Image (tube, rainbow, N blue to C red):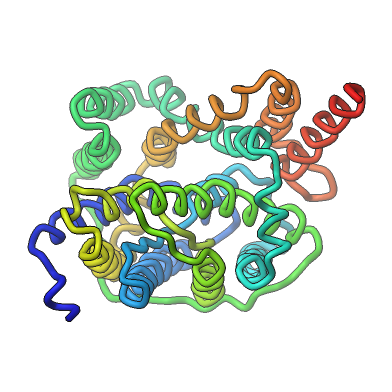
Length: 386
């Protein structure tokens, strides 16, 4: 029955979804892991386990539900880590935060009140916090033009030109151009070790990491990835039960965390490819597109060591600029949603500014304080209106 549902049409769409999902955001993952103190081998391990976990997760969930369930890493979560203050205790404490975030995702799936609480966070504040998180990386292309004019202008120029005709391919094209420029500068590129190498990290748990890393990571993953992911599936006629999927992504995140994996969640952008009409004319057969994409993610994961080694010899600003271009669309959408309603505009602006300031109190980063500040402002405005 499964093989009867397979159509050659699902093959190119699934491969495209995997390539776009990986190439458009892996630089953000690398930036996030580097920022929280991961060594080069731990960064490679994190990228590998995330790719394999989201590939296998997408395959198993699509087979179980017969729906195109695509699982990806938390790109907003990685952006949060990239701008967070240095974590006391280093990468083991960050891994502990990843596990605590995974536990909250599982709890969100099995305990409905928590899911309702997450859904009740004002969208304007959630979007403002996400925009503040992404601002630093979105400025990287501008900084790259100032520091590396030829490389920066070339990457941005190719990105803009491709986006004019097919926005979906713009960031992957920028990644390829950046790779060519790196090779050109190195003359003898280093491809690293192609063999899979996972590195286990014993987690350490601290209250500061729970409040400053795990909680904001949970909020942005749920609000910016899982909820939009369900919306994309619903728009295309698929109605999976949210609880089991939240639980599954939380379990996958927990399994990946000790090897350096950031949170996993439902896909949104690539889910539109897997669940849309371009995947297959018959909705009942589109789950094969997510299966193909999952298999491709696993293959990409097996080459994570080589990818990480290659990227490590490039100027960090060049990699950050590609990550910034990848986040530009999400940044603009978040800002528009944050400031769209007059009654919450001031609170959203305050949330954005505090988050973007990289403010840190008691070792807790700006994302948490931005949400608190915006929530207090919104509450005060409603209290005054009574």
